[in-house]
Structures are given as structure tokens and as C-alpha cells.
Amino acid sequence: MVNEFQSNIDDANQTANRIYSDNFDTYFSNVRELGNRMRSAIQPITDQELEDVLTVLPLNLFSAAEAVNRLKLDMEIIKLESKKRKVEIQKNLPEKSKISKSDWIASELADSEIALAIYSSVISRAESEMTYCKELIMGCKKIWDGRRSAEKSNPVGELNIDTLPEYQKDVYIK
Image (cartoon, rainbow, N blue to C red; front, top):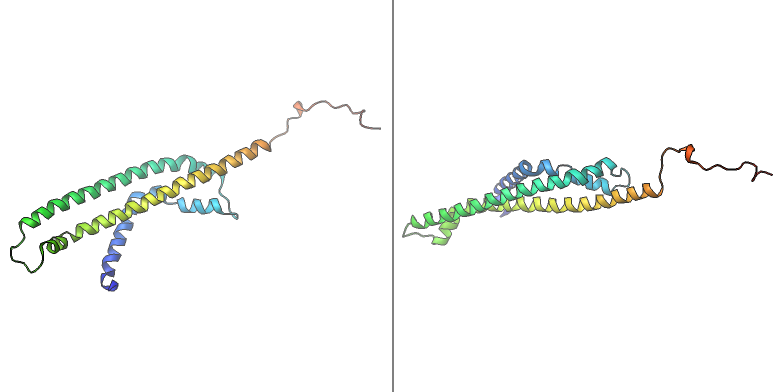
């Protein structure tokens, strides 16, 4: 039974992936890789990458939220247009029909329902990615703070010999 719908499912998935890519790839393209690097013991995340996560990613989240809102608006427009179309279908419905009115209307609005499902899927995926980004930011902040506190407690830098105290040479030599 699933096989007879597979082409429709594939088309819907391709459409959802295209909508997601068009709206969110610029914001989330390397987020998963950075998350893997944050957990990696072999190739740990660099300070530059941490800085990017802490400065650029929050701005990307803001832009992604705007894109989610645009998609939600698109969904609302589809819903309203579907309601309008439903009224028109009900007006023009043949009186004598073998199919019930509700089934007739459902079949006429199936494309709208599919579009709504696709948009809902894309929005859900984007919101999940935004949640992942927030967790990544918090984790990177902890690593950043840990590295900075380690630098403060164990400073490494040039030795300034002008500030060393004067020691008496003869006191300790016998």
C-alpha cells in the first residue's frame, strides 16, 4: 500500500528539503559539524570556532526565526485560501452525487492539505535545529569560560625580568 504513494511521498520530501534549503541552509549549514567538533577528543573545537558560535550563531538564530515566521504566514495564507475554496466548492457541488459532500470537498482540498503538511514539517525541522543551536551556544559558552579561567589561573606569556625581585647571592651559598 505504501508503494502506491511512494512517488507522492518522495515529491513531498523533495519539496520540503528544497524549502528548508532555500530558507535555512545559510543559517544552519555547519552547526552539526561544530557540535561534533565540540564533543571530539581528537580534533577539539578551536577558540575561533567557539567565538563564531558565540557571536555569529545567535544572529543567525534571529534571522532563522524570521524565516520561520514567514513560513508560518505562508501556512496561514494556505489555510485561509483553502477555506475560501471550500466555500466555493460547496456552492458549486452537484446536488446528486455518489460521493458525500465531505469526501468531495476533502478530495478537492487534498493538495492544500499536502502543502500544509510540508510547511509544518519544514517549520518543525527548523525549530528543532534552532533548539539544537541554543544548546550548542550554551555548551560552547561553558568551554569558552573554562578555557579563559584556565588561562587566568595559569598564565602563559613573556617573562618580564624587570619586575623580578632582587635576591641576595651570598645568603644561600655556603
